[in-house]
Image (cartoon, rainbow, N blue to C red):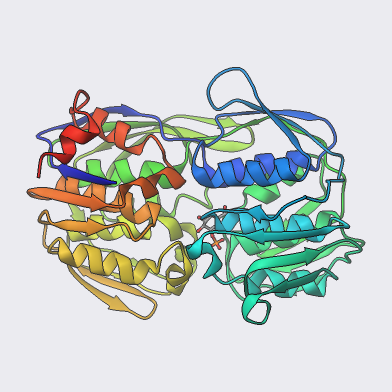
Length: 440
Ligand code: S3P
């Protein structure tokens, strides 16, 4: 599907992003193995979370629609799942595959996990290696580094493991296995990454200790907990950048999760001179939440590197769009992890923004963006990557002329309402998708 976006004279209104994808996966997974029944409100309807839900149902978990949109009821299985009769399909979702690998390593049966072409090319050795050390028997393509993965789980023992990459998916996979292991699991992280698993395990009665970059967790049967999923800051980031770079914008993004392990994008943009006001700060389901008022701003360049990178990892493509509108040169370094996301996000971001007139250069571990204050409409491709599709749409909202986004349907992976919300904010509420397409 292709969408054609142009810059509206005004960008204004309020938008509520979908439920946080990371919290949604964990709310389903952790409650599935817990004792008792949990209500989950505000669950993401993105394809990635739907993949996790479908896999859990194949494992015998009863997940039923609750009252109201985004409301679900999960009946916990008190630690014991059922051997699946078929291959489990994680679709495009790295989080589903990596977290389920840990989860299934603790179950005494055979299962096979696969995914789409993008996911089958993403590195799985980073979870397989520690899970094998815990006693799981896992086989995969390319010397046990790529999916499909065949897992025979059960009889795990806790490990002490030094993680080579700062990855919340790896950390969570090992913790999920550790819940079913004998003895405690100790993890040493190279840097902080999102901590939703730690928070939820603690809220469910698990014994998990955090000391700087070291985590210690005892095996446990968790108690089901109701979860109110906050709005996804990674989805909010598209509207935040669009509003900052548009000359005539005032946008409120409501109900955004502002967990400090996720707010690298706010820290970076504020350092660039962004006018973002946090209002109605509150705590929902153990996660900090706020409404964000975002206004057109004069931005200046920034350097993003080191320990900052895991806190902003999914927002770097749209930060590159912001950098095009910031005075000076923005350097993004130490971000080689971007190369193993849904697409090689260094290569795809540089290629697509260059086509829109950006002065952007590729580096092995990041990109250099020279702010010119303008982008020009042209044809862009999502490369099947949801965040790239939406970053290109933001470029269209603030650039000149018409920007075409080919493969726009990729946004469904995390934000199925994205195009509808875009029309709402850009005052094109009555314009149907086909009519927008005819605008070229
Ligand atoms: C996620 C962790 C991040 C992120 C992904 C979601 C999670 O991946 O890029 O979109 O929910 O744990 P890594 O932890 O592998 O960097």
